[in-house]
Image (cartoon, rainbow, N blue to C red; front, side, top):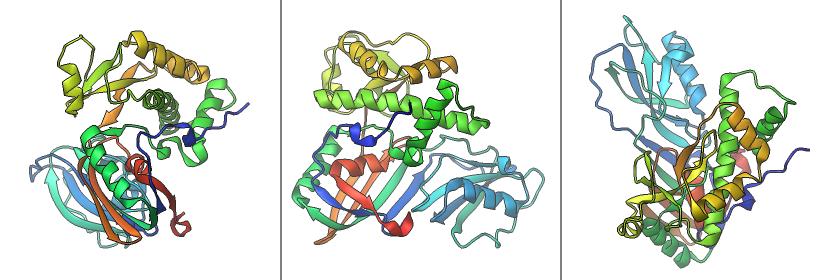
Length: 347
């Protein structure tokens, strides 16, 4: 029997006092990728800063490969960006012994802002952060409370949920993962397997985080916690240091939750009990992830939000701007501020 999956099961950390619409048009969702790489000016890789409108990243990469007359595998990018948006991001095109291509035949959705040679390919994950500018329309509710929530998020942090897009259209990646692990379906392509594995372990993580939010401990110290430094990926076990509580309050470090796989949980006490309780709700996912050889990892339960500004443009329109680290979801911040539907114009 196929499980019914819904994001509505996850607890909010903040009151979400507004309602309205977002992404009424692509310009309402602007994303600017921030990288911290000094381009050398020479080399066989041509780096392109691209502004795309209403297009997904893989499609843009394919168009660049077509114009450059190279295989799509020779085009690199740091991460996937939303389709229903105006996004600025970098791509690299490997051109050994070749001159810079003429990109005049690119579709209108793709605009090259700048280009420069470099000696390395742009790899996945090689980005510092993403800047977001969101315009929310037809808003109603308590604007003052929403502005206060944005201030609190800046001070307290944001729950680091995986967003709905991780789970696919109508949560299809989770359904496929379940069928795969049960033996009724076998994904043929490597990227499909990766999507389904990521969805399954992200689903377990979200439940761990939701349980901590319900306890109101998602940004606090819980017995047996495992911590991660702000901006880092290495984790360490609670060593009972007296300064940990203050460092949590300052957003210098964060509690973490399990990304399920083989191995023993490094957490202990109350946190270990919580993780086991949440994971055992999904025995098919746990067994499937372990069978596929994934090893346990950790993810911060919260993230630090930089430069968060709540700007009412008129009585019914709000502009939110902020910066998130790689791997975080703007829609999760939006869900803490209000309940916003997407216009049918771009679905």
